[in-house]
Length: 381
Figure 1 (cartoon, one colour):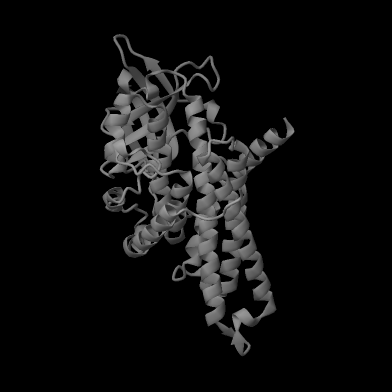
Figure 2: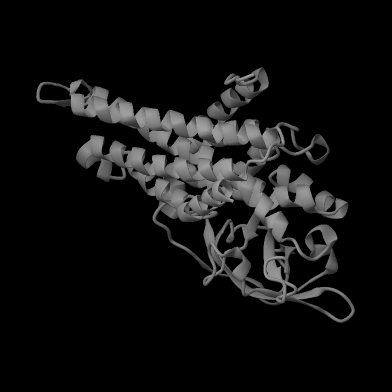
């Protein structure tokens, strides 16, 4: 049965997250954007409310809800700050989720309770300076030591939370003769000798999310750091990206919706040629198109979340959601700036930030072109 209604629990969580975002996140956005620094003090507050562990079992401190509920959280947070939400997603979706799904019992016990409580922060390191969308073409290597353990060498780039993380999910080849399948994943603690943050990256958008370049030089990690206790975890990486792409679909749609809201507000308040901007047909048509695209993006993103939640195949739909929502975010934020005119070009108005933030959507965690390839491959196989 087709049903677009959220459950009572999801409505309650939406209301709670909306209030939290307005009271706890919004006052921090301006300073976080200016200083290009994620406000780490919010993590324990989110942890106390269970919002860092929405899809995680109660035994680890989570609340045992599903992907749809997590997307409700992402939507409300992203309307206030896409950058801050990006760091939270990198922690929960990309860093903690692989441990939950593929980690050993010991790894789950070591990391998940403290991560879900907001006591430690995770990052996820696949991308390298010379390797972006082609994830199987990594240069990082991990060689087995005599007597146990591994020696990790490699350089990672564009790593969200890289400057603030306490642990990092790191992909490296343990068997280069096997393309893709020879990649293994390690959980590397920040204080491990040989783990170095070489620089923090300054970005066009998402400035309230810390992004870094990392280097692992003769970094010695124990056997216990190998995710799941076994080599060959390329499937785990790709599985993690699917849930991340669903999240990105909702996040991008939320950025667009926030920009739409600001455009409507401004059009009603601003007067030109003796009447409100909203009374001009050209502006009405813009807003009608923007609103329609936002609704379509949200519907597609939540369909992907529903498929994921119910255990149905959703690789194609997750890619569709990420691709389409990225295009919508780019279009709607651009039009929102246009409606604001000169005011849309100054930092004083939030549409300027939404416009900058929207650009990342078509690049991160698989470019729009990669998503189109995945969609086409599924349809044409």
